[in-house]
Image (cartoon, rainbow, N blue to C red; front, side, top):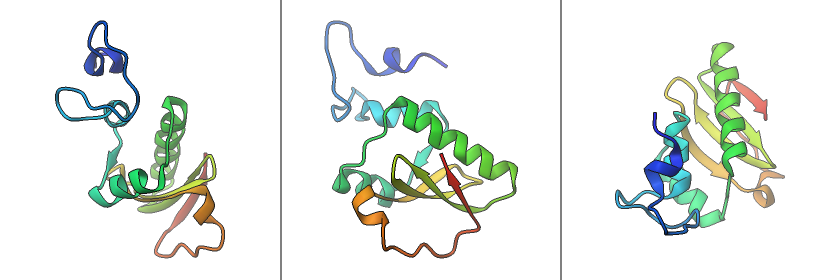
Length: 118
């Protein structure tokens, strides 16, 4: 796989994580693809609405947590990364929804079979 920067950045142009490349994808989306993560339309909407940002290290931790859950046979997992919560369909490596740090406390997460704190 080519480095994320070569897929996303054009020479001489600086970019923020919210800018889109020629294919219409943000840097964060390209990075997630490189790590084998998928975001459902609902999860993408929640990430944008709630201002949830994961840097490369955070996305790597999320991907590692999903791999851990898969190694234990999990199907649907709650993954906590930097006080943000992600509900993940583990076999598909698809983030189903995302909850920001301010809304995590007091929520009840149902229909999960595991929790990973990354």
